[in-house]
Every structure is written in structure tokens, then in C-alpha cells.
Image 1 (cartoon, helix red, strand yellow):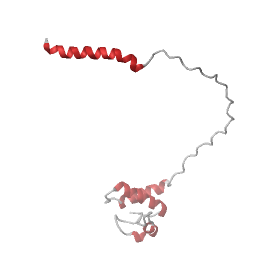
Image 2: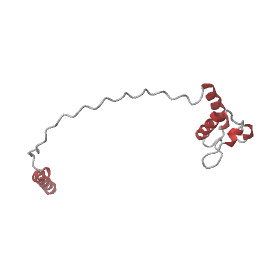
Image 3: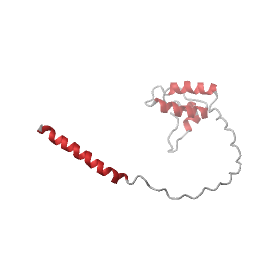
Image 4: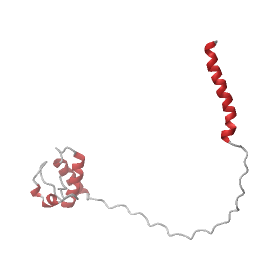
Length: 127
């Protein structure tokens, strides 16, 4: 019986303390709301012009050119360490220059536009 004495005493003390603490923590339950001012009707907003229709974005690259660039950049980036990044920048350069050098590296003399594109740091943009 001694082994249940402490847990029982603890449970009873928590129960009694929570009964006395609840009204003081919650505060008075019946409070009168402060009087409110009557709401006056507001003037309706002036009519606004409807928004212009949203135009679809023009395609970035014609379908035949996209296929050309995808295939050429796939070959160009076949051995790249970061394939996705290589294909992205190769595609940008291909779209602007309309050509991609052959092979996986070098041969940039075949496409001067591709060779001469630089990024913001002054380094070659096209892989």
C-alpha cells in the first residue's frame, strides 16, 4: 500500500491545484463588451476597368530549331560532369547562334558566335 501513497497524493494535489488555478488564469468569464459606434455606410468604389486579357508567352524556339539544338547539345554534353547545366547553356547558345561545334570539347572555331559568347564574369558562356 505504501507504494501507491506517493503517486496518489501527487495526483490529488495536482487535481486540487488545477481547480483553484483555472479561474485565476482564465480570468472572469463574463465581461461586458465596450459600446461600439454605429457603422455608417461607405460610398461604393468607382467602377474599375477590366484587366486586359493575358497573352500567352511566345515560344522560345521554333520546334525544328529546338529539336536541332536538343540533339546537338546532347552530343556536345555527353561527357560533361554536370550534364543538365551543360545542356541548358548549350541550348541557350545554340538558340542564339544557330550552331553547335562538333564533338564533346573544343572545335569552337566551327561556330564563332558560340565561341565568342561570354558570361558576366568574362568567361566563355557556351560549353
